[in-house]
Image (cartoon, rainbow, N blue to C red; front, side, top):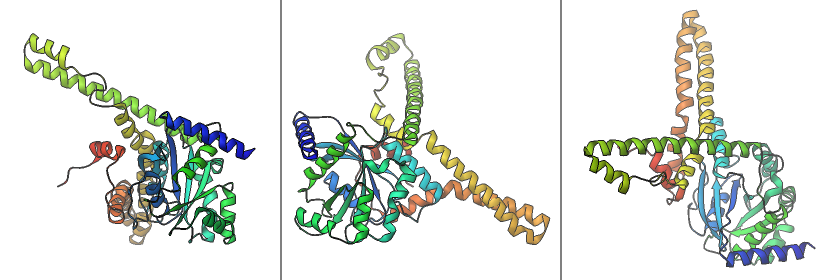
Amino acid sequence: MARELHQKVTTHQMDKRKKGSSMELRLMLVGSSGHSQFLLTNAILGREEFSKDVISISDSRKYFGELAGRRMAVVNGPNLYEKDISQVKRKVELRRSKCLCIPGPHAFLVAFDMDKVSPDDMRTPKLMMRRFGRHCLRHCIVLLAFEGNMEEAVLEDRVKKTDWHLRELIEKFGGRFHVFSKNWRDRSRDRKLLQKLELMVASFGGGHFSSRTFEKAEAKVRKEEKRLRKQRAAENEKAWTNMGTNMGTNMGKQYISDELYPQPDAYTTNEEIRAKAEMDNGWLRKSLVRGLGTGLVVGTVMGALVGSIEGPGGMVLYGIIGGAVGGSAGGTAQVAIKHIEDRVAPTARLNFNSIFINRFFAAPRQ
């Protein structure tokens, strides 16, 4: 029965691809530690977005590409066990990764190095349920990175006969797994991975995973899109009105009105608005404000404790200093982390999101 369903699904999906199916699969890539999820990104996209020495990133990113002819949107975030980012930053990036994957991922791909699965990795399923929702494991496939040129049947047999840590880990994810080469140029297993993805998605009626936080992320992105469109429309209206006024003649105004006046989205496309709203919206800004407030409170308390040695006056003075330092740290931690990331990961090839993100957020170089 399962084999018949698999054949029907794969045949149907292959027919759709031949007809040029435009349906995009959204994939959330998750790594426990190390560079496995970044190697997997390269393997899915068929290009090198991350070099082999990248073992961590401190922000969330979205890439577009194709896997065996099927359009893919691939979202990466910090590793689950990443220790070099603050709790505030971790929370913000978790929210951002959800915003980048709205209305929800069709699949979570959980990446491990085939030869480096440890007992600590057994905590991964619980950690994922805590961060994405208790039903997310149903939508997961374990991806195991390997080095070499072994046959697929040999690799899968090796996985089934390997140490109990790996076997038990795979069982926690419903027994679904796939092996992929660390060499992204090896495309021999692409179609097999796509078939596994489509079969799993078909088992849920072709739908995607969702939860209350993904629904909240979608609502916040939509709200931000609406705000940005309204803001940009007002800016365009003002700019063109001023241009018409400066020309100083009715003929000039008429010429602008009839020939040059822009359509609502002429200079800001829907894709550009969406990209900006996914990367920055009220939900994400709220997390940063809370981080600033936490830093302020903790800094004030610690400063007051240190100042207590000097007496009441010292408590007040050091409390003020501590609050200022703590608040500043909470507000600037994101910038510091970004500079740390630049030393960890090389500059990635510009993708659709990064082009527009740079346009709106990048500070001018000195």
